[in-house]
Each structure stands twice: as C-alpha cells, then as structure tokens.
Amino acid sequence: PNDLIGPGGGKLGGILVELRDGPRRAVCGIGLNLAAGPALREELPGAEALDEHGPRLVRDELLLEAAPAVLAAVERWRDEGCKAVRQRWLALTLHRPGDELMVTVPGGARRALAYEGLGEAGELLARAAGGGLERIASAEVELDGRAGG
Image (tube, one colour):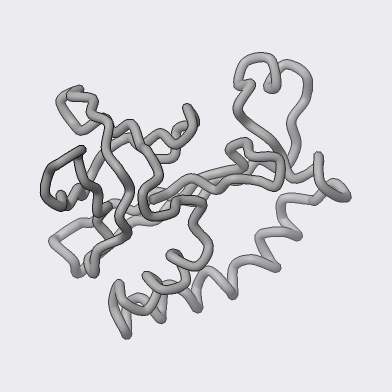
C-alpha cells in the first residue's frame, strides 16, 4: 500500500519501499505533489496537489518539518517490525473489508478481488468470489478505478 490520497480523492503522492539483502535493508522513496499547474492536471487527471488545499509550501521547509517524523516512523519499524506500523496504516486506509478491488499482479494477470485487510508482514489480504483468502505481496491495486498500488 503506497499511494497517498488527498482530500479531493486524487493521488497526492506515494511511498515506495524496496528491500535489499532480505529484510535487513530497505530503500524508501517518498514523493509528494506540492503544486500542480494546468499541464499536470491535464496530463494526470487523477492527481491532486497540496497547494489545492492550503497555502503553497516550500519544498525545503516541508522536508525540514517532515524528516523527523519520517525518521521516527522508520526507527519504530526497525525496532518493532511491521506490526508497529500496520495498525496505523489500517486506521488511515481508504480500503474497507469487502471493498471491490481490481488487482494486477506482476506478469499482468488482472483479477477482481474483495479487500480483507493487511497481513502481519504488510501483504494485501484479499478474496476472490467464493474463494479462499489470498496474500498478495506485490500488485497494482485499483479501488473505484483509481490506482492505489
């Protein structure tokens, strides 16, 4: 789960975590749309930016404000594991049990599944109609037609 959805329902940014050397190392990238001009809105109609919801932010000032919170979350994850951040994610997610998802797994197979939750290791828990619970570690997920990877 890595998309950040804004108050208007559009994609505000995203978080990508790639593991290296097993679970011992991770590379984390965070992207956030601070401002969006007409060209961006036309090219990416599902996107929104922070400047649509308040005063325009200066990138360096935002970084100085956000960095301590991001580092604290990383330290908590490092010290306590996925369980430490899982409950917070579940409290903030747009997904609700039973929500219909369109899931595209690596290799391109697309399937309609129902959201069931987030597993202990951070994997998507979903169920096909009449099927058992599936654990999906990597996929592109759409909810209501919006990508939510």
